[in-house]
Length: 267
Image (cartoon, rainbow, N blue to C red; front, side, top):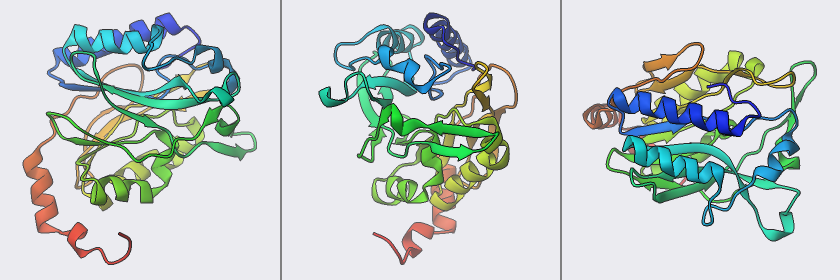
């Protein structure tokens, strides 16, 4: 999807795409980072921050679309109120996982914040308006054990090693709003590497297109198997990438090439 400053419009688009995926048989639907709002300035999201407990337009909409489509929803990056000391200054970039009843099953707050300056290309300082999380999170679902992450996290393989080797993740979730420039260079390579080296499926829902005069995202929502093969992809425009994840293939890959058992460095 291509989110804008129109929160209600973005949430309606999410609900429609979720229903479309559910109609194609999806049991788990992933939304991209910043699915509810992308503004011209990073600070524009601050007034939209919500409490996960108290709810609000964004959190309530995620729960409603899960219930309406009878699917788990991985809402991969919404503005959550941070500690009182951060009030009005920074929020969390939060991944909310809810079940088909709309109940919270896991919460992950983005650890690695996108502070990058590539002149004429990508210049963003996420840490100015976003507080970092500090907890590595996996979630058990009827489909698989999920390892949660958001966008820029994908450049830090040690996070995914913890998710897979230490915490038993089988599917690595990477919702993103990757910039057009960095995405064209690295998106597919990084995601395939995380899948292959951790012998996990990767599910990466993405923003695409020009959100406004200041922001453009690469797109290419994608599902990758543990051998690095692309199972489904939305190359351009709005849409859904639907794939069936096979626990048998996961077990076979890990049995035939037991990289987890062969690890020497790390814990």
